[in-house]
Amino acid sequence: MEVTTEISASLLAQQLKILDKISLILGLDSSVREALATPERVIQVKIQVRDKSGKQRVYTGFRSQHNSALGPYKGGVRYSPKVNLEEVMALSMIMTWKNSLLKLPYGGGKGGINLDPRELDATELEKASRVFVREIYEYIGDELDIMAPDINTDSQTITWFMDEYERISRRRDRASFTGKPVELGGIATRVYSTGLGVANIAKLSAEKFIGGIEGKNVIIQGFGNVGSWTAKFLHEMGARIIGISDIYGGVINEKGINPNEALEYLSKTGTVANYPGRKVTNEELLLQQCDILIPAAVENVINKASAPLIKAKLVVEAANGPVTANADEILFSKGIPVIPDILTNSGGVVGSFVEWSNNRSGEIIDEDEAKRLILNRMKESFNSIYSRYEKQGEHNFRTIAMVEAVDRVVNAMRTRGQL
Ligand code: GLU
Image (cartoon, rainbow, N blue to C red; front, top):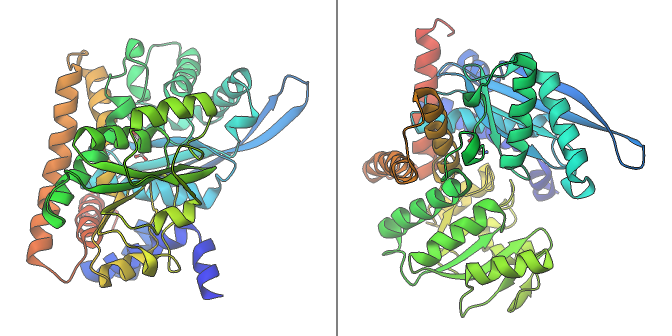
């Protein structure tokens, strides 16, 4: 019963539990903890679009602006039937910590629409995207809230957002959104920057914890933008991808999966679930023997029930919130390091920062420079967390990263007189 409760417990409950722990370590009193837990603004709007058959479809769009002590809100927008108010609130909080940890001049925000993109064609998706921006127009912008892609959204979605925004403002405003196509001010790295960052953090942690990345067996749950690019980069680094999955299921192939062939297979069949190998469910995939396990899909997949059964030597969180608070403790007690989301998947938002800076400073950064900036920023953060980790063995990697991230936000709020 308890296990079921934990599995279905919201991401928000998980995040609040983590925040409680960090507040205790930092000695924050309950009013400070409350101020950190409460989003500054949450917007909910009705999104109505008429589909091709003439039927009105009604969806709900959300934007949670969690904290802006360090700068304008920053974070993605996801399209999924599972999107709900609590989820975006939790995700916006994760963005606050992520941006703080990476020392970006941003607060945290997150949004979403509870639509299933598989049920809508491009015209309908465009309509929904434009309505969303119209409804939240006053609350977004380059120094207010900068939106970016997330699950099921991409440079096309961002272009619709930006175009609608610019029609209303009657001026070009490239820095108001990130994840744009290159010809509209995007940077070439943005499409792969999250995966590049994940692969590099996996490599750095493999070097510290399991003797290097070469020849190591890797399982990746989720083969979307993040999972597939991570697989490609790790493959190039000499790791062996032995398991992949998507929402339809997964496959294990101990001989190694070539990510490029898997991508080709995906584009032909629409899924990797039937790729040659042993078929497994998404739950089974996580429990297979491997060196590095990379959950790159959705939240709460490694929980109290599955954590004791994990056989990986290292868990690298590419999704936001894939390991629950209880599971984190269990893995720590089993001696399995968990490299947290706020560091691991920060390549996306660090890439966004490079893009935003580039738009504001005259478009002088090229792809190589962008790549270098992203990797350096993430490596610095990894090294700083690792050196503290070595000194204070009693805390896990996430705790150390979170302490640093929360502390920076608390200091900014204190200086502003908010605490
Ligand atoms: N959606 C990504 C994330 O969760 C990127 C956000 C951004 O670039 O603003 O970190």
